[in-house]
Image 1 (spheres, rainbow, N blue to C red):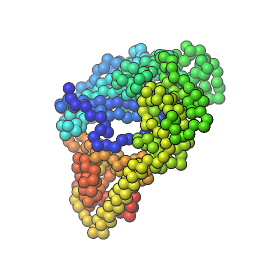
Image 2 (image 1 turned 45 degrees about the vertical axis):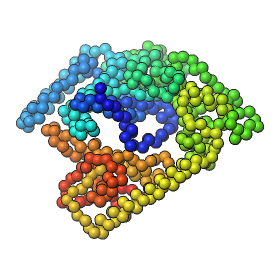
Image 3 (image 1 turned 45 degrees about the horizontal axis):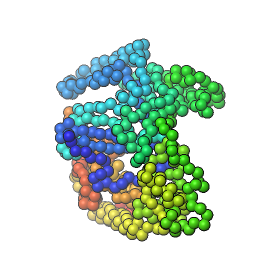
Image 4 (image 1 turned 180 degrees about the vertical axis):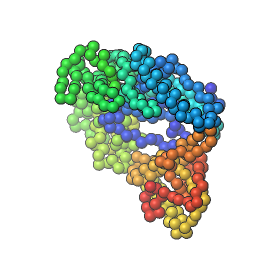
Length: 485
């Protein structure tokens, strides 16, 4: 068994939590596990999603038949390119016609299995293994680490191949209720609760359909209201039967999570707030996020208790939220907090709305660091332009990492911490012959030697990626004391 590594665990700062009504309702978490077939190391990354864009598998995909690449074909003469494209076009027409006339029966689980099924990363798609320090054949698996309250599913009905644009009109069967997503989770279904099971079953609330072809058409929605289904067609709303909904050519589906068992914790505001006359400094009272209480009241799984909107991890108020802390929180009984914390986990416990002294010290240190880094890069740029330094090598840096550094400099509070080590692995790609190339232009910025050296000495990381030019150029404006552009 290989070792496991989670993204963000190697010196990278904790990601900033951004919440809104959209993220609370539609956002879930995908987990990708890539296993290097050489050293057996497993790299785990997680990323949020607000919809699942599922393929509609044909016969080949449902049979899990993968085309085998012939590396010798890369050395074939270019005189075969025209005939190859012609054969590809004929194959597209053949497969589309075959699936259209004798389309295999397809249901939503077929699409989910095609999306979450394991895939091989080989040939030009080989994975860069940080342990082997080279590109290796790998195996990738996807799963859901956190299920959303409302699951939005989009079917890829529009297909663009070579010179053709087609629409897959095949009917995909879907359930009105009891869509079970547990087979596609990572096993734990980490929806946030510590002692309460997180529901993984969904019922259909709305279906968006598309009438027409790839060149144009009309959208109609079927939605559920009060237990009955209705068709929403522009300004016209009319009741429809469930059979009409089940026979619809689904394009976008909206499933709402249902609880498999009754929520045994219900409350009203009067029952959880302290009685009149109770002092706010009493050990029998504390504060809880109004936002989280709203999720507890309206969602099947509110997740762990969060206080980050006004409080720090030390259980005090953030330095920049002192004026708004009372509007973000609600005073509740300490016994109610203990019950909620035991059931859902999270925190921290906040018993006084006072500014955290530790966070105030950390904030001042961050402000000093931001100022120092901004001035140092500005001085290096100014010195280099005054001396008209010319070098044959220009250093490249990932746009993604540079964007994180810019965001850190522009922040005036504790929300954004310094970025982790420089990660330039995305700048290295392989051509069809296996030769190293630099990725497309919009993925990197050019740096001078002095600025690159400063970044590496401050943050570490790599690898070093250079390009030979007649004259070194830098995309960092010399007269800007804020950030790289």
